[in-house]
Every structure is written in structure tokens, then in C-alpha cells.
Length: 416
Image 1 (cartoon, helix red, strand yellow):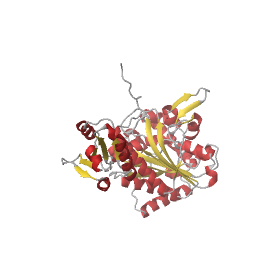
Image 2 (image 1 turned 45 degrees about the horizontal axis):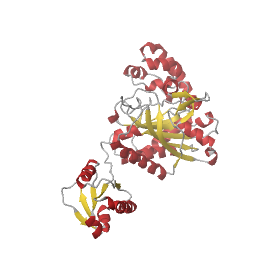
Image 3 (image 1 turned 135 degrees about the vertical axis):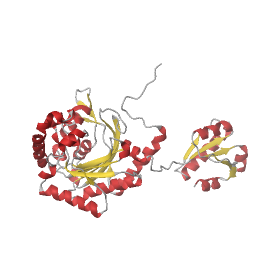
Image 4 (image 1 turned 90 degrees about the horizontal axis):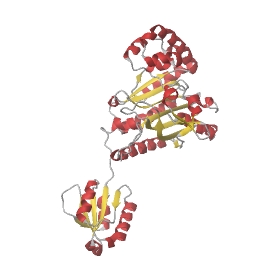
């Protein structure tokens, strides 16, 4: 009989990496809460039109990457390819934008039909933060400080921040016209994707990874030539703030985002250890999104970590601390209740430890082998002698030493 395998591009997290995922999620959660961000929980499935209207009908995501299907009522539904549109939709629907500034975070799987490769699956996990109602450049600084704090904690040695400003939507429209005018004579020399984007989404050509296309762009018009005074001031103020706070950054004038809703400042963090898909966190401002989705005019900004890529970038340099594992072994089935109650007392007093009590197998040699195989650090053995003397045999499985006879209080003290 053939075995089932996971669907291509879906993401199994190996058992020995799950604790890394938990620690990363917990650290980002703790950091965002310290900046007064609140968790919002969002559905994985949304109406397809939500993404067409927000992300952009001509973007690669909407045009060829979404997992879309018809419901039984013949409505078009989509597995979310990104989270910002859904978060904004929920905020409008729940009336959050009427209650003043909002700082929100959420995490979960996203879905895009792409060619699976290192750091990129069709099912991928994101952790996102969104801030609504704040028009000050201080919120850009705050989000950048949050990411800098997280990358520093996880010791990503080559993490680098790149920033750019796309200007207002009006500036982007004017720039697009000039860019098309400049690139049209080079149409035959552009890569295939850039040729398509010339008619549909010319700004995305700036993001091309093809060297020949980048050489053509070297003398192209710059979006900065079309900034409004407000956009120029915002960008300059952000750079001054980053300098004042000692945050290193690179200006990348070709940095754009693959979503149509962005305006003004955008940013990305990259790590060369990830190869060609080097970005592990990115975001920017999208002040027009709320109104586009039927809400009130609301300044907005956000960012997303690609958790898969973040873990790839840090797991070789950061020392993830694993919980100590304890195996409780009984030598007679009549001690089942005794062992279960003792295990519960340890869990109450030492909640950070992993305590395993099977209670069925009473063969000491077999149980010790299983404990070692399970990477347990210690074994606590309960036999008739231990029960009668109200003590326990304590064995350090990582050291070749004899067992110790210890009281419950002594075991708790040692494990602490």
C-alpha cells in the first residue's frame, strides 16, 4: 500500500525544530506586547475580491499565485496570500478604526502558488504587526526598533536594513509614466516578466533580479524625482531618526513591494545566509488601504516576518535553550497512582520542565533506554524501597554516575 505524502509546497515542521518555532513566536509576541500591540485573530479564508481590491489585480500574487476556489454557494474564496488586507477588513468591520490609534499583531499560515525553494513554500508562516491611525514618522521608527530588537536577540550576524520611499500614489503614477517612456525602447532587451510588467505594473520592474534589466535601469528616472514636499520630508526625517538612534541602514532606490497598496516609506531586512530569497522581514506604509476597502481615511503601516526564513537565518548562530526533560519510572504497576501524583506535584512546582510518565512499562532497563532515546536529561525511579522510605532514585542520564537517593524536596532543589 502506498504511503501518503504531504502536498507539494506545504510545510511540515520537523519535530526537533518545533521548539525553535515556539521560542521565536513567543519572543516576537513578548516584544510586541512590550510596545503595547494587541493580538487579533483572523480567518485563513477570505472573499477573493478583498485581495483583488487591496493587493492589486495586476500583481503576481493576484494574477497567478492565489489558491482560489468556489464555495458551495458559488462565491469565490481564497486562502489568504498575505495578512494585511484581512486585518484591515476586520478592523473596519469591528469598528476599531473609530476608536483611535490601533496597534495589532497576528500570526499564522499564508498561501501562494509559487515554485518551492529554500525559505519559500506554498504554505508559509508569517508574524505581522500593523499600526493604524498614526501619521507621524515616529511609528516607522517604532516598527524598525522592534525588528532591530528581535534580530539582535536572535543574533542574526548579517542582518541588514534597506529602506526606500515610493512617494505618494500621485508621485508613483507620474513616475510610472516616465519609467514606461524610458524603458519602451529597451523592450526587447528586458526579461520576460519585466516585459509583461511594462504594460501592467511598471514599478515592479525595479525589483527585477535579472542583471541585464538592472543595467538598463541604471540610467532610468528615479521615483525620488517625483516626491511631494511631504513625502521628501517624511523620508528625510526617518533617516535622521535612524541616524540619531544609531540604526544602520542602506538606501535601496529599487526597493519596492509586490503589493499595490504601499505608499511612501518601505523597508526590508535581509540576510545573505538565505541565498537569493534573502528578505526575512519587510513592510511599509499603506495610508490608502482603509478607504479602498470601504473604511474611513486612516494612516496605516505594518510589517511581516517570514518565520520560516527568520529561523533559517538565526538557528546556526542563536543558542536556543531546550527545556530539561525528566522521565518518571515506576518498577511496579501498583505504584501507578503514586508516580502520577508525584509527576503532577513536580509539574506544579517546576512548570518549565518536560516531565514524562508512562506508568505502564515497569522494566527498568527498557525504560532507561527509552528515556535516553527520548533525550531525557534525568530519570527518577520509584520502586518499593523508594515508596517505603519516601525517597527517590535520581539518575543524571547525561553523566556516567551512580543513582542518588534523594527526598522530594532535594529533587526539586536540584532541578531548580
